[in-house]
Length: 315
Ligand SMILES: Nc1ncnc2c1ncn2[C@@H]1O[C@H](COP(=O)(O)OP(=O)(O)OP(=O)(O)O)[C@@H](O)[C@H]1O
Image (cartoon, rainbow, N blue to C red; front, top):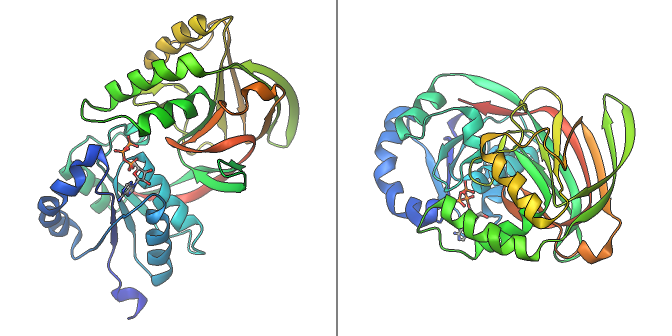
């Protein structure tokens, strides 16, 4: 088949949105094809599958690839495209998730016709991505791109609990219950960090329950952790939330929903385009976990580089 004849690929996560996508996708296909023309659809069968599907489609010459799912599916599609050798293949999203934190930054109303209008508008934009290197839960070196936010500390613990919680009551309820469980188990991390911005490097010691490296603005189902972040400005906003106690940390965390945590005691904000961090206190290592675009991927030490304008977003 010639590259030109290859159809756009829809990577569909049937388990996204609390399992609703698997039930509703058949009814979505007619309006999707009416807007985009004939497409190829592939259902994901397991975690990581969307990476393979997107990578293969980019190599086969798909004109663009659409993630039909939540933040996790979009992250996997991005990783597939950026590791394919064809990073210029545009990616798009039809949001079906429970969290939808990256979608909030894009500002598309959560309706199928609005997603399709964005994709068919002919608009593309380039955005920055983060490339993270860390240690996986199996103890091997891990590397993965993120488009939205990578956090270390309590966020990764929340992820683990969210993954084992029913989403039937919706994303907010799942995150709330999981956050309480994670709060009981988390530990303050004493971090040794090295931050760079435009080639200037500085060393910092940061005591924190949660540190977020932000390309986008929202995580945890609508918490506005980095209100100043832009996905295409060539820098990350690093936001760390510490506190004199877990209770103080929890009180400050509540302010994140409205983006009112900045400037409060225990909160630090630093920009960077490169960061290295590791723990000085080993007692926190097993609970100071990495959440990468909402997925639990591993533990510290962690090294992140910003790759400017790496991704072509369609819509
Ligand atoms: N067939 C499958 N069975 C089980 N898990 C899957 C399957 N396909 C994909 N996954 C995994 O489902 C997880 C959640 O996907 P996704 O983030 O897209 O949906 P969501 O959790 O509903 O949305 P959000 O992250 O926006 O809240 C991802 O880790 C993905 O790898």
